[in-house]
Length: 382
Ligand SMILES: *[C@@H]1O[C@H](CO)[C@@H](O)[C@H](O)[C@H]1NC(C)=O
Ligand SMILES: *[C@@H]1O[C@H](CO)[C@@H](O)[C@H](O)[C@H]1NC(C)=O
Ligand SMILES: *[C@@H]1O[C@H](CO)[C@@H](O)[C@H](O)[C@H]1NC(C)=O
Ligand SMILES: *[C@@H]1O[C@H](CO)[C@@H](O)[C@H](O)[C@H]1NC(C)=O
Ligand SMILES: *[C@@H]1O[C@H](CO)[C@@H](O)[C@H](O)[C@H]1NC(C)=O
Image 1 (tube, protein in one colour):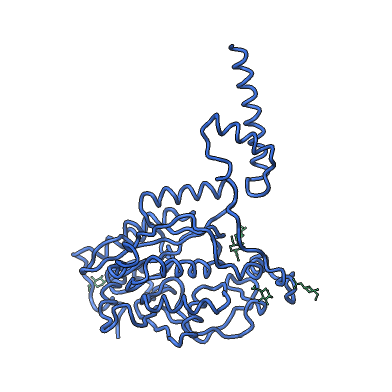
Image 2 (image 1 turned 90 degrees about the horizontal axis):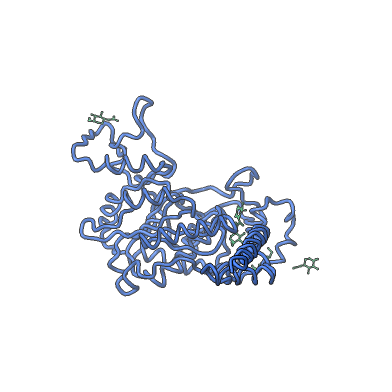
């Protein structure tokens, strides 16, 4: 009896070793041989593991556009741009995490006054955590509801990808605030992320009044934001609003070394329409739905904020400038003044590039009832 047990254990150990080798080799992302499937099945039954199929990549419905290889100079383009051209037409990806009830169902979604839509990457756990307890906290303010949703793709491959997906799943079961699709969460896929969100919104939150679209490294004064939007007389979300840091009279950057490099193979035209910097902008539900409608007939451009501008232009709508949106950072009058002084942040709506710990500090300081701010240090000097 004992010997038989030992033999069983030896066999099992061999199996485990083989499996580890096979799994590392294939990372379960490519073809896994039938043999490893058998071994896995055996181990699965003995160890109560999930079924083999859960480790298989979800069928990707979208195939490379082979004609892209024929584009002049294709082989000389940087890898991420080649990738963009090959998959530019793909707009549908499987959803991994969903929160269909975020707005209380499509019918009740008019009760959400401000939906904070935050672009995040799977690994940015610390940023999400700090936002959840600071400016993106879900709450009732001045009689209206603020809700929060993070939008994300996937990072890495194989084990690392699955670990990060597990993290997001845990976060979502605790907070119900993550939408995740199975596409590579890269800078050049941000437009895709925005479009997938708008598609989701049309389905689950069609009557949301206003939205903030922003990065996970901004400081947003969401109290001021609600008050600003409430001050939009005659607009309950059913009219046009698109405001932020307005950028005009610029065109594609043609320098290969830039993060924003867009070669003629991606866009021929030398000019971009007016748009608002993607760090953060405010828009109405009406405008969000209009942008989505327009997007059906505009080829994706990798720079997401410019793409929003293209959709607005096509609809005959204009983005506007908001003085309190500082996606290019804050101008501080003198070197001797602390640029993190809370007085500068009481009146703004949004500032880009904040580390998580500074978001936490600032969020508490701007709410300090003893904070005394004089006219001299207001950012709204006229
Ligand atoms: C690429 O160009 C070659 C030569 O003009 C042509 O034969 C081929 O069909 C093209 N391939 C695609 C996928 O368009
Ligand atoms: C495939 O790429 C070619 C060349 O860039 C482009 O003209 C064509 O519209 C693309 N096809 C699709 C389905 O996007
Ligand atoms: C995702 O895209 C980035 C940037 O193009 C690239 O470096 C990375 O290898 C890609 N990851 C996967 C899993 O394809
Ligand atoms: C966008 O995501 C898709 C799906 O993961 C991937 O095939 C493609 O390479 C990504 N595009 C870029 C430019 O990273
Ligand atoms: C802002 O104004 C208050 C009151 O005038 C003053 O005490 C404080 O030092 C000023 N702060 C800065 C950063 O200038």
